[in-house]
Image (cartoon, rainbow, N blue to C red; front, side, top):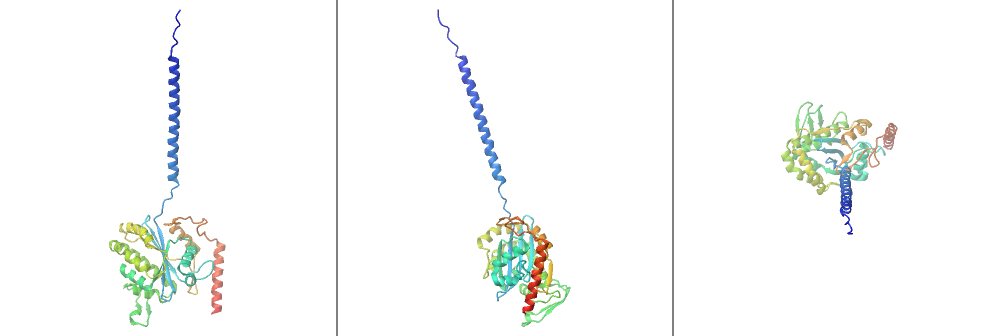
Length: 333
């Protein structure tokens, strides 16, 4: 009797099922890998730090004798279409030592002045520039000077008749760079050096606005102004760093902004006319406006890498230190 052949169908079915199971498992694994890789990409993008194009420059006006006359920090903020202007008196007092910016510059130069400005006002300075009288006057003249209307009569005779100061209250006058420097260098205001600080703020505010109102000319003059401001002085602002910032400046100038300057004259207490203690409220406001960012990277105030807010006790200590330093100097004199 002939044997019946066994059907191969069950064996083939097992192979097919095994193949389908393998393909399903392989597909699932591939899907999970793709999803994981996509998740890695998202994680990488999430930790990327967006570079803030804003930058802060410290300008220090220096006399031939090497004495600090005054200073200013300008914050260029393209995201806000603003240039924040912080004029600084040479008689501003450092919180930790009770010494003025003038004394600090004399002892430690521009680098130490930069550190002190950062500490006193809790802001980040990207670069510093010391500007001599000729450089300041030239740049002011390139921009076109300013129109100034005194609130009081200003009068003082000089050794040279051409350097005499004689301006009437309420009468607008065109001031060249030389005339501006003459006013800044003399104590002719009725409220003492506070008047010089206010005038410095007015000068810088107008110069910034004038520069933006003639944007095409300013763009063509940026290289020359950089050379004038950095030539012969002490600076941390290299040509390469200027080139990096220039695209930011050109972008702002291309917007034809009318009045981007925001003036922030320091508030506080003047003591004996030549010692100025900034108010804690102003310092805190300044931190908010200037922010904790710079072109060098993100900085958050209150962190270990930035100046923290002063407590009321620390503010009282600052005032006591300043008063003691002033008394000591008076006694020595």
